[in-house]
Image (cartoon, rainbow, N blue to C red; front, side, top):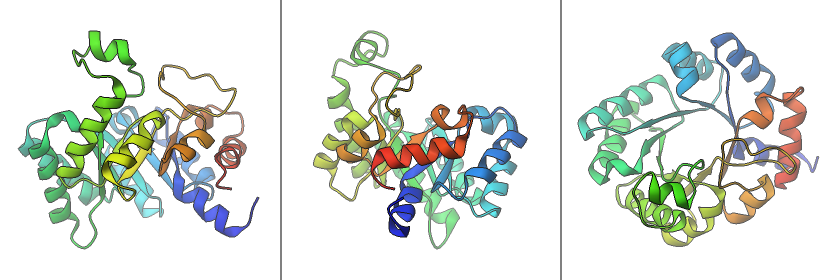
Length: 243
């Protein structure tokens, strides 16, 4: 440990993905990890299994919730979803940058209108960390390299008034360069040294992600699948150099 300021920084930067298939396990993990991390991510699997009430319960317990549902639809539909996310009390939620500027603008406006005083952070998903250059070109049909596509979508998100983007840590630096230091970079694809990367393709270690410019590190399986999740979180924070 490096002192109380370092502990606060670790909690601010680390977001643990509650990779659990049911409500009870998610709440158990959140209960033991709450003193160690800054926020929890509720993704598609858990949201579909446990529903909006889980988000409300986490918020009522004092947790910050990153609602990772990757909204991508016509502007009116996404605006409605954004409004609902804000009313749930989400601290952050995401939309797909591929939905275009109008969709992103409407999401921010709806969230602000629903939240009242302080709206949730709204970030745009760029190129998924499971997609490499070949898959982006041959399977998605985008000729740009991942780095260039992330930069393009980040600039679109900034123009639409979003707070930041979700991208791999490999693109964090170019996003900061293109959009400014205050534009948030949320990075999944973070794997501690020696841990299997699984289905992720574009990854860095926690220390590498922080050095590259990431503001928040999203970590799931290296924590939730660990025999001792608390020890795993502490090790990640130490490796990131923020604790």
